[in-house]
Length: 483
Image (cartoon, rainbow, N blue to C red; front, side, top):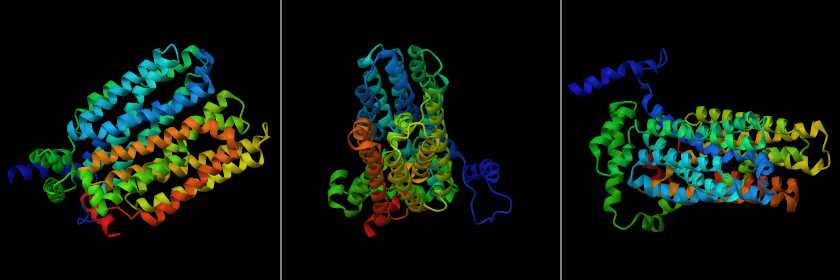
């Protein structure tokens, strides 16, 4: 009792500081410690976003320096997403065996080696080898950061904390665009190498910082380390009563999994709630990427060049604008996720994506030959900004939040790996076929196709997804069984 009272007294100033003046005593203040843990874990996603998107500007200078073709650019841009399948499928296994924390450290290792190889590459083969190692890191980052954030967070702030990986991915994308712009004035043989090298330095510091975080309490409970799990829950819950309740719910789920007989994958085949959860995760990840977001992320300068923007400096500057708009929109999603819920954000997002893609497609359909028309270029820029903003205000972060929180504990690592694999397959298909696609059906046809996928995702979300805001992770399977 004295130890518990001491803990309450020591945390009182922190909790009091987070409580607004005049707040009702019945509303407990939120604990800030899980926020700091989730931020540190999610910062690996900055490296993921940087390594994926840096090709957007680097490809211009690589083509000039090494003479790589459009086909090779397509492969280098999109292959990282296909290679990430390796990381995505291994991450679930690794996180279940080594723990969430060490898996994040391993992820940083891939982001150290891959970009370093790219920086020193002398030809296409070495470039592809570097993209392969970076791709494994991308798969790991996409799986482990949302899992850790969801498992460390109390229900009251899970939407906010689970959105952090997406905001950091977009921060990485934005920084890669800034890097593209900053190094664009250098000679071609230096410019693209420095763009990749800039992503190497932070990895060591991030890996060291991650080792200061606590391990996921749910992983500790799965390993039978209940005392350690309880200690982490005491530090990451809003109140001691909340910590006790979370521990009881986790223990029930762990006991149910260990006494259920058979494998987790047998449950997928035999339990309606579990199989429906996994199908929902796969569908969400399919729609998120099939709607074409990575075509804009990786080929934004090419799209705008075809809309009439002719200056390389202006193209890279506009790319920075897209990155700022995309990252800034995530802040709206973070602020609203635990207030209005996941489902409204997803519906507004997919509706806005559909509208902006239709406008962008119509610009190319109606003004395909207007190469020097500033008004046409301005409308195209506005449509692209609207697309990246509406994507990031809902579908971008909420697909990961929703997926990480509805998967049962015993399936979370491997299920998240499968969902990420689906996401990366579709991203790879989109990015490795975009140049060929618009060459076959025109730029207008490509964006009309993406608009149709976005509209289908709206219908799927409206008809199939229940709201999860405020629910404990251990309640999700029942929610999907009864809906």
